[in-house]
Image (cartoon, rainbow, N blue to C red; front, side, top):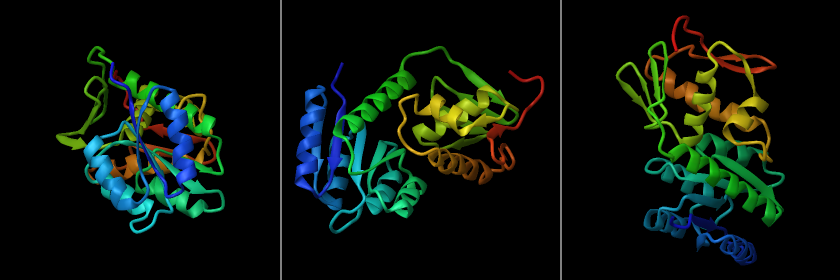
Length: 233
């Protein structure tokens, strides 16, 4: 099996070198970049499995790098953000980040989160039977990781897909943010439950854009549920 490829982007050389040493010790192939344009070039050239991306970069900042990449790639992105900059974290998630880590952080913690993300990705892409969930006009093919609403293909990131599958497995049942985190990110998730709200919002918006209004319902103070469709498997 080929070693996973990690791209680390930060303009602080000490952070890059430290993460590179930790990740290479785990057997990963590590690429680095120190500015936004170099990050875009490296991501396109090396096609990493995971991108660790600092927001505060010279030239093209991390949020713009993320926005540009999301037009062409579904790479799993972990943002590095300053502890006080909550707005940046929320914007980053809105633009398409899958997770974030606040500075200062423990390299061991970040490596643990990368490991957990890679485990989920391996599970998601492992050969499986064609397990298809039908929910009204919504068709979720887990083998192909493909979602269709009527004849429309719904373009979801890996995290968005996993969230929709979690909801679709229990139609009509309310899942709390913590339950969704455990389904999608696993029990070793270190971030804030708010990340769920942002990603659910993305899925809902994409479904509504093709006529799937009201499929995902918010139960205030509790969590989310997929609309129940009686007599469907």
